[in-house]
Structures are given as C-alpha cells and as structure tokens.
Length: 51
Image 1 (cartoon, rainbow, N blue to C red):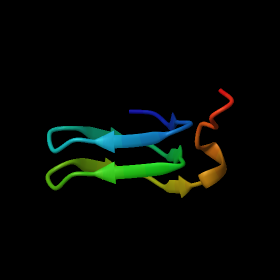
Image 2: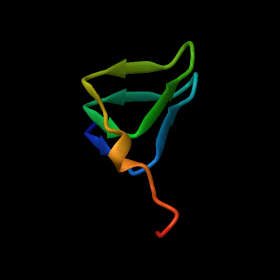
Image 3: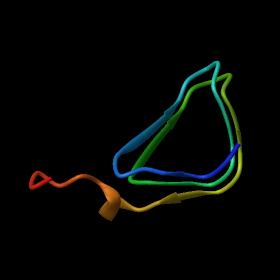
C-alpha cells in the first residue's frame, strides 16, 4: 500500500497488487493483477540517455 513514482516503467505482474497512486512514463498491468488508485502517465519522466 502506498504511492509509486517511477522514472521509467512500472510493471504489475499477474500475482502483484498496488493500492495507491502511480506516476510513471509507462505502465503495464497483467491480467490477474490488482490495482486500486490513480495513474498519471508523464512521458517526461522517462530516463534520458544523459542519465
């Protein structure tokens, strides 16, 4: 339980669960995964090649 802030991609696998908000450049949620919250997709969060 809690919020997730990622610079790249968030993957929630079929046995995974998230209760909270996600802010990420990309997200993948497999069938069977549990997610309850809000999603903010922000492409500017993607890691740059300079990092």
